[in-house]
Length: 166
Ligand SMILES: [Zn+2]
Image (cartoon, rainbow, N blue to C red; front, side, top):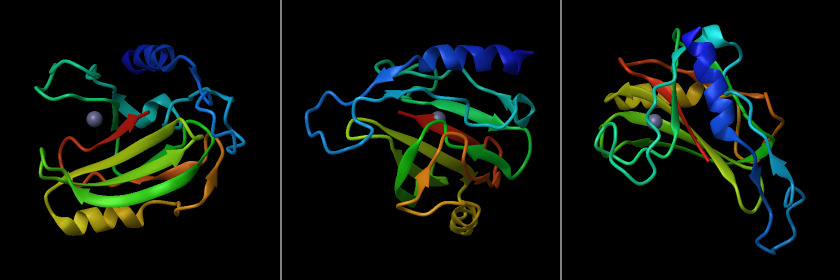
C-alpha cells in the first residue's frame, strides 16, 4: 500500500516534460512529449521510494539530491527504461561523497533531455562495481523503448538502490 501511494506520487512528480524548443532540429524526438513510467516492473519489486528530492536545499541528507531513489526488495531486481531513448553513456565510478562504487547509465531522449539511472551498489569494493556493470543488459548506442530492461541492481551493500534523475 505504501509503495502504491509512492508510485502514484512519483507519476505525479514526473508530470510531463516538453522537449525540443532549443532549435537544433535534427533529433527526431525533438518536440515530443516525455511521459515516464515507473522504473520497476511491479510494485512488489521495491520496498520504498524515500522522499529525498532536493534541487536547491540541503534536505534531507545534507546534500543536493536531484533524483528519486528506488530501494529494491531483493538482489538483482530488474530496472527498466521509463521512456524511449538511446543509451549515450555507461560509466562506473566511485562516488566522492559515499565512497561507494556505482554505475551510471545515461539514456538520451532528445537534444534537451537525458535520463540518468544510477545503479548504486553501496559497496566500497571496486569488484562489486565491475559486477554491477556485468548485470546491465545494454550498451552505448542501443535504442530503448519505454519498458525495456536496463539491468539488474547488484545489492552488494546495505542501502543499495537505483537513483533516477532527469
Ligand atoms: Zn539518490
